[in-house]
Image (cartoon, rainbow, N blue to C red):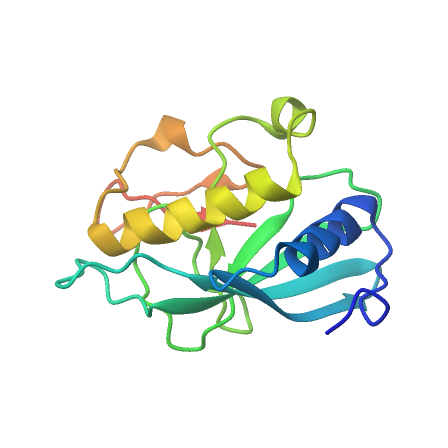
Length: 165
């Protein structure tokens, strides 16, 4: 895919695509970049540092979908793009209707994040989340994941982390 093929609506989405294409790295590649109903949808294949005996069975390359609001008014939504991505992980949402999970990769509110979010920062955050997940290093800490999602409790299992839209 070339930069000419990947013309998007939002400034952040376009900057991210341009960065990935210019990076020309074996650790990340652009799979697709489209606009759906005013939302820019970028899919990247991200290399994951998977240990020899991973705690969570991630692949060495994971397809990740990043949804950018066209007006850049909210944080990019990071979603799995693999149909059989493991369920029940910390800092993930309950699956959407299409079966995809949202990953909670932000530790600060959007009001703070938007001032310093760069394409490199976004990519590094996603790579770090995937690597730490494969190693089992993400912790169940409700305060660490701040986003527009509300934390819910499951009635039967007691307190647990799940994020819903």
